[in-house]
Image 1 (tube, one colour):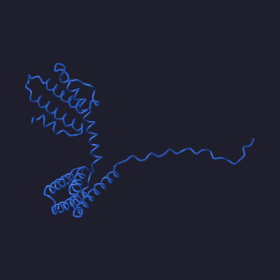
Image 2 (cartoon, one colour):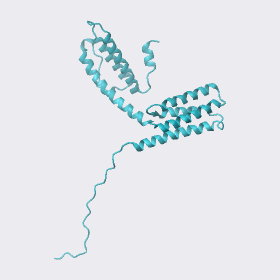
Image 3 (cartoon, one colour):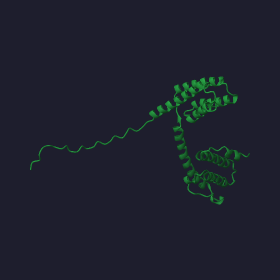
Image 4 (spheres, one colour):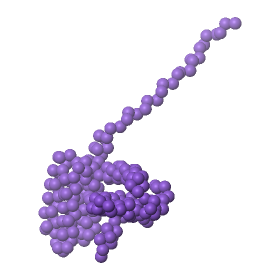
Amino acid sequence: MSQDDSLYDNLPDDPEEAFLYLESVFRAECEQKIRDAHHEERVDIYYVQYISKVLGAISELGIESHFAKRSVPSIEDVDYQTYVNFSKDVEHYRTMLQIRRARRRKEFSVALDQATKIKLRHMLSQMRDIVDRLDVSAIKKEALFAKINALQAEIDRDRARFDIVAALWIEGCEKLGEGAGKLKPLRELLDSIGNVFNQAKKVEGTDTPRLPPVEKPKQIEPPKPTSDDIPF
């Protein structure tokens, strides 16, 4: 398997994530080749290679709508300014994607305070003890320990992702589904961990600065009817 094969075999499933990954690799390759070039060596070929690869990724990943329609330029038509102009458009799109990713991560993750982290670490320690005593195969234990360790590492991050919690819950509730009575303590811990995360997210939502509600403008009251007769 070539290095290029492994690059494409390990792409993220999401097209936008895949583009960010590939473009960064292509750009790093281009810049490295230019740095390594000899004084009189033509470097325009490296600009063409970068542009060609990025356009190929754009086409195959189905994100053409974000870019003006382009074709791979001939090497005679490419210079440093061509590369700069193309890179500017790519950087604009990268910035949009990175902001979108950050918002997505925040939506599906939560910041945990120190007290909550300590509480969760204690729960995971209890869970390890329970799993260690379970009468299940070594393979199932190892799979569950791997998910516990993954959540442990996630708790230590600035923001903990919900999909890591979900992965542990699935491993505990589905793959160890037999013998529900024996697994009751484990299920209770899984529920407790989920509740801790849900509560932390609620608190985070409450603490998020919000604009004050817009007050309705006061309406001018209509003239009150009078019982006095209007003299003629």
